[in-house]
Length: 126
Image (tube, rainbow, N blue to C red; front, side, top):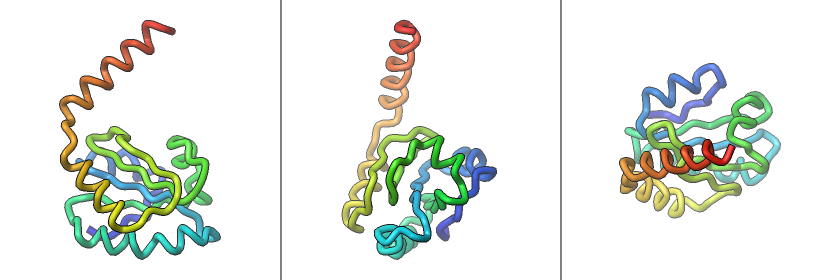
């Protein structure tokens, strides 16, 4: 699967139709973003079953706000519609590969249980 230039109106469908989504929040003027771009593209070619999406924060401010992006690049790993990890700053290719490996090994049943407990606790404190 080629890298997708994700637009806000495509977000819901992209998350719904892909088990794993990796987001690269970037901007045209950002030097580290430009350096990381080819790494992101190269690794995307090795994982055709994962949706690799670039989000231009200048054009898609709503998405950047939804993910509380404060610095760029920011790489966000999602599985089953849940953000499981987010990293501000460019990362080397081997670290991106390691993040993908950990994401694939994640026990999503436990993640859903932990999320339910955290949400229940938050609701009881409100």
